[in-house]
Image 1 (cartoon, rainbow, N blue to C red):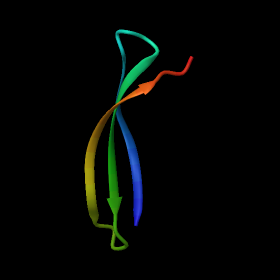
Image 2: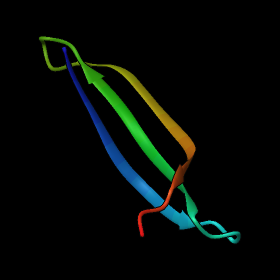
Image 3: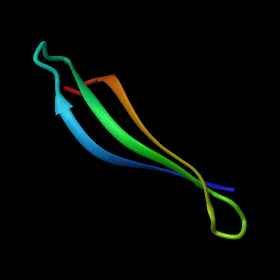
Length: 48
C-alpha cells in the first residue's frame, strides 16, 4: 500500500495565527489501483 497527501489549497484565516488547508489523501494497492481518495479540509496553526 502507498499513501500520499497532496495540498490543494491554503487559505489564511481572517483572525490570523492559523489557516485553512485543503488536501487530497490517496491510497494505492500493490497493483497500482486507487483504493481510497478523499478530500479533507482542516484548520491548522500558521508558522511565524
